[in-house]
Amino acid sequence: MRCFFSSARQLYTDYVATMRAVVAVTSVLFFNVAFSPIANAQQIKSPAQYQQCAACHGASGEGNPSLNAPAIAGLSQTYLARQLVNFHSGIRGSDSQDTLGQQMQAMTKGLDKDKDIPVLVAYLANLTPVNVAQQTQGDLTNGTRYYQGKCGACHGGQAQGNEAFNAPRLAGQDIDYLKRQMHNFATGLRGTHSEDKYGRQMAMMAKTTSGKELDDILHYIAVQE
Ligand code: HEC
Ligand code: HEC
Image (cartoon, rainbow, N blue to C red; front, side):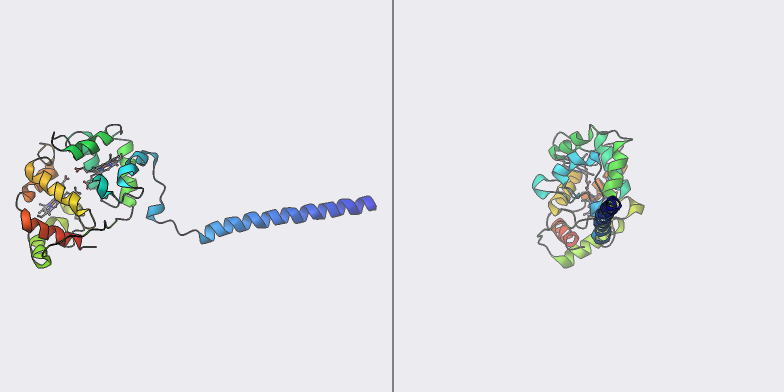
């Protein structure tokens, strides 16, 4: 009997211990599921291919003005794919004076166009677009007028981009980056390659504005969400 009781007690002790463990594990699981924030775009795990990019473009594709690296989160799939393929094939970033374009071109050389670029594009296009904080000055009334007259038809009224015209989102982007691109287009550092159909289109437009007018346009873009 004694023996029966002690083994029964042992069984009971084991049972209690097991149940405690089960409750502990279950509640850990429950807490993780119930209280972890719903996975949003920024928490999508970045693919291995993105690790080397994060050094300049930031962990969430938010860009880094001090490294001249633009924001790339949430740009359209087609625009991202075209730029990465253009850098990779030398259509963008080949001009000897385009040092920053060359820097970015070098980053794409190790990528497999068919395997790595689609993975990067899918990841980046899914991230929430950022608004790079910036201070610009200009005349908003004139900027609005010039922007709507010269740019809005392709880039959208709020600079949100327009897939139908292959024109990327400009809102939220680092204004110094946009200004440099306008200069690059206007002076032939970008958008002159014979295969750069859309870059050539934009290069034509960039030649139609400069100086104070361009600053006003950029100011209008900077105040868009
Ligand atoms: C050494 C810093 C650096 C690294 C690392 C880097 N980039 Fe860049 N990236 C730049 C710079 C600078 C530019 C702007 C080039 C220019 O002025 O034309 C750029 C431009 C781009 C653009 C064009 C954005 C636009 O609006 O047209 C894309 C897309 C991009 N990078 C994606 C990537 C990806 C993907 C990786 C990783 C494979 C990567 N970058 C790694 C510095 C970097
Ligand atoms: C005819 C349509 C069209 C008009 C009008 C137009 N753009 Fe563009 N823009 C484009 C296209 C297409 C691209 C993408 C080029 C590429 O693929 O490299 C572009 C690219 C750009 C870029 C580069 C963005 C980046 O992330 O690197 C800037 C900056 C820009 N446009 C500013 C402007 C401004 C400012 C105006 C008005 C003065 C304007 N665009 C008018 C079609 C247009």
